[in-house]
Length: 424
Ligand code: GLA
Image (cartoon, rainbow, N blue to C red):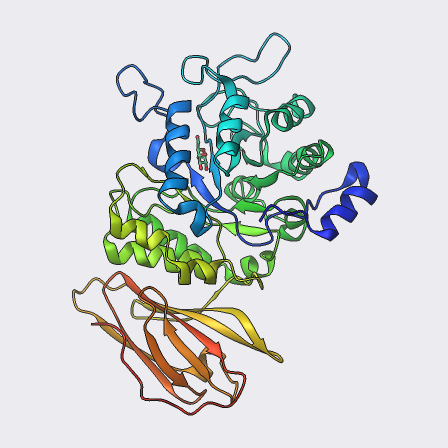
């Protein structure tokens, strides 16, 4: 994820001060982000285990490694709001709250790096962060340099207390300053989200040359209703959002809330599958000290993560929506000529209590190679057999749940095999 591509290097070299594309995040970034689960809890006196403090991030960094999240691909650990002191230092630099981060941010970044992880920072383009701490406006150059000095690898730049009409200049300016430090830093923007809120249509073509990822919709919270509303937004706006995404520049539907309080087991699988289909950044926001094993297994599922991280970087599309059932398709590797393999998510939004049977002919999902496809269910890795374009794939999907399959294109014509039905 972090390796600077040749294109990026050439650009940093030749384009000098105006370099925007940084060559990073060729696949969707993956990591852990504090906000959804830990919020702005600054009360370390009464809640020392859960407050926003260096202790919390160090513990999560340890668990990212010891519990297998790093090996699964989650390699960034990031601050969110409320890490700051309310005042800048005498020399005008941002500083962490001295009681909650007594060793300062550089020491925390060093600790995170010593665990083999990248370190993420949160700030805000405006005068204040959303939580009311100092923002970067009027200090852009100093703050970009401070982040580089601290060893930051990833910057989430929020957009509270700022004028959205000025963001078309402000976000690129700060992106260029980050690049000028010479330290590779993934740039996560909230620019389109704040513009949409104010009725401004974001210029995604331009945003994609500046930011590695960007938010465009509401904050996720701990409920299936919230996850559902995000999926709807991505389906309803797919003609604008799909062309905006690709290697190095991703739409960000917000954090994974799997393992918290609001989602059932099936809903958790559904969020994971949909975020994979959407080529979304995968940032867990969950207490890794207490997560249940079955939720951890969903977050670490290798098949589903591989779909998310597919090198083509194509965001999936909703191709069917009727009576609470949706079918989403994401083209993935391997390819045969112009034909690609695909991941398909069958999403059941119904709540009428009994699983729903859903069928589709492979050709209706855009899978037309006459050599056929090996169809595999993703969560449990079940092999469903070989299908040809005119064969009908039938799955049974639990209420507010998902079935996700990958159809891998065959290099040579394969014989249709006996079909197994997936689902209960
Ligand atoms: C905004 C962002 C959230 C989080 C909070 C912090 O609402 O969208 O992701 O960073 O600010 O205050």
